[in-house]
Length: 432
Image 1 (cartoon, rainbow, N blue to C red):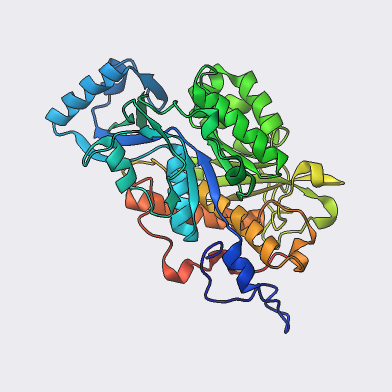
Image 2 (cartoon, rainbow, N blue to C red; image 1 turned 135 degrees about the horizontal axis):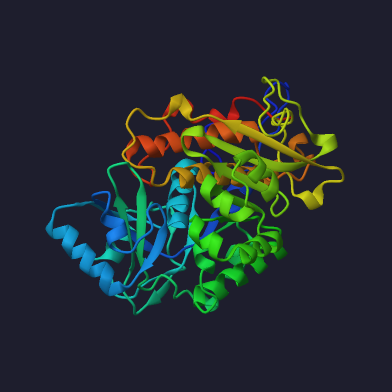
């Protein structure tokens, strides 16, 4: 699926009909399509360490925690001297997702955040820019006098990742640097729970402002939870924030447990639907779930085998396209699940970025929805106010495939899109 972005064909579905409607080429050139994301700009520093290393530095294994700048610098120098730093990359959950979205869609995305005012060749800010897709627009970033933030990723022999965050300027984004017109015209606004860690930080106020602008313009707000310990520490706050500000929530099974109190991923997704309209839940080696709402008259039954886990025949309507609950006259919860593509890569050095890759695929499909809705407004596909272009089932396939690609290349940021033969994965069938 190549739109938003360049398409080899000017025609749109349904392909079975003899007379198909073409998009207006002038419209395509004039109307911008992009994703906006607010991020704590960071450089990821990946380190190979022994199993006891995180605990010895006061870090909880598998979690993301704040390190004092001085402590982070001391650890960095120790690991650098020992030759245990395996790579330094542009990072940040939202930054990774924006990059991957632009690689997949071949379209622009806009990053909002703070970056060092003074950038020199070889420093952390330089490394961030060098490893970010040229299609990620950095022109709206706020310059800061503070150093660049760093996320030290400690990879233990079992493949588990523990993060120690050195803040730098990552929280310096002020509300004045939120461009209202840019947010209003976006296909979605992407944020993370990390932005809301401390209400005294400027980036907290900026995030709340951006969410208000997006919701007023009916731009979907998509939130990735980031780490279970943060959600546990402010569970009531995040549940309330999601309920009032978030359209789609993305999380892994540990974060889902922290948010909902439910260990079973399917039941956790069901619970999260009481807070948000769309849920992406990744479960590692057990694949991923998508859950959403649909108006019963627009529900489409699957042709796949029905599955029962904690919910009976949970995938009955997985061929449906998810909608906002408020747009449903007869709201119905819908679910889909997929196991890892080809069982997952044979060798996985670490799982950094797999969830971000899956979310980038979903955001691409959400952007395609707006693209198609604007370019071909009379299409029968646009008679329903859905959140995505494709069904839950099809989005599971796409997100799953992108996650595989991220895991296979051992990097949270895609170096390229999917292989050419798979670029039309989303267009395999039309969801009538």
